[in-house]
Length: 112
Image (cartoon, rainbow, N blue to C red):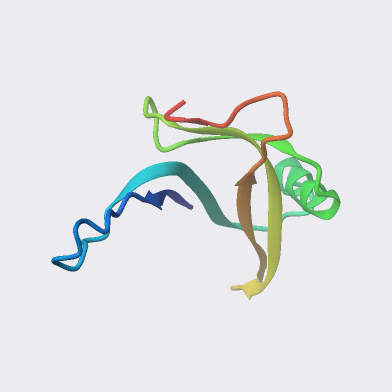
């Protein structure tokens, strides 16, 4: 599993008086959390079935990622994308990507 928080920035660079080349500066304008993971596909696993159904329909699902016991993570309504992998030691695998959505009842929360 990989949990990444990217920061998008907007330029605040000023041309100054033109006597020297300006140095690029910026301010944070948005946070971009991203979750990806790989799992073994077991057709009788309810989590696998739910993820595959969400990916097939584009329907948002609730997801909460917690880094470890007692630690903070990411809580959001999200859409799921999947890629089916080749069997790994005889087991089928699935790569899962999570993208938060704004058209839901819940606002995405970092460090939830």
